Amino acid sequence: MSSSPSFDASGRAPSGEGRCHETRRREPRRVEVRAVPDGWLAVRFEYARDLISRLEEIPGRSWADRDRCWTIPAHTASLALLVSRFRGEDLVLDAAVERLLPSAGLENANWRRLDAEGRAFHASSREAMETLERMRDELTVRGYSPRTRKAYVEQAKRFLAVAATPPKRLTDAHVREHVRMLLEDRRVSHSYADQHVSALKFLFARVLGRPMEALDTPRPKRQRKLPSVLSRREVLAIFDAI
Image (cartoon, rainbow, N blue to C red; front, side):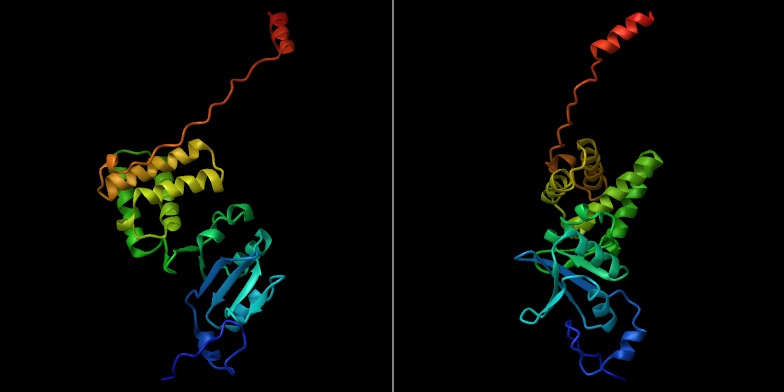
């Protein structure tokens, strides 16, 4: 039985080693993307000729020999192209790269978050999926409408992906950061963020078994909008029509 091939993410291939292995490979391959100083994104992955070919389609890419990684410009066009070219692979992003997703139109891209210790957690992991299934059951038993059930579960799934933390280790700090990200980075409406808080309060209280008062996360204040006021001409037109 042959041994696993060595690898070099630069594409400076180990003398043709592992080509048959690459051909048989079907599992998504990890592609790690981190923000680095001076306006660049560092891209790392196990050596694979087809991945290198995809990366070479991104303008401005270069190989950083000292850091043993590829780099691409840290702007939305490069990130959008990267996500497009590596669709189907296990894309893992750090928090700084994650913040670029909305401006690149990639809110729904399939990715995992890389935590400070370099570990990745996926919202489709077994533990997360079991948690979401329990949440779906609880919502059904408590008589929530199909529309609300779907919205709450989707919001909880997004939260688990962004928090990059197993459900049992989640804290109110994760919720606070999630709400801040929604309001400041993604600039969603306050009513949308408020719905996220409702979904997460249900997740913590009814699914994870923590009292609601233990989750000290304030709801975002609702935006106050001035009422629509008729112009003088519109008021006169109404009186003329009487």
